Length: 119
Length: 109
Image (cartoon, rainbow over all chains, first blue to last red; front, side, top):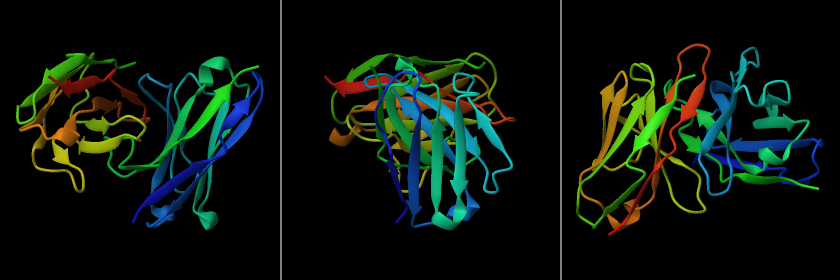
């Protein structure tokens, strides 16, 4: 069974940093691009970043480019999102997802981890 | 940037009825379109990819159609568990940039 479990969310002050993790199991993690998506509570979905298996290709939405970094450790079956210079409007639920089909962000999603940016 | 518009914003229907949800792109996305279902407190669930292909485990009552700028998600007979928010999402090609529509809420009439 494919499982994705996010962790690392919490309360952080504006300007601070946070590193999210996504632990993958039930599939060959090395074979898939992986992605991050966020959702402000009660609002819509925003795709953030995607990377390939070998970390040679990484792409970001403009709103996080230069502040967020997507990375992975294939030996640990883990995906990461390093978030720097956090702002109040980064407050959201953050999901990781497995990218399997060319058109869709992800076919399997984790349950999310909540990030709150507030003083 | 490609913008997706979904209509209607809310669709009020009874169980057993047919639901037709629309998604329009500001420019052609070919068939690079997906549909998701999201229930309160849950992650999105992929229903349709490549505009018309059902994802693994998705019931046949869900179908997708369209290409270019106009797409439709049809639920042929609403089950109680189908009342949820539905999002369309497009991919721009290369580089891979994805955007979501604002969603359509299907609620019980």
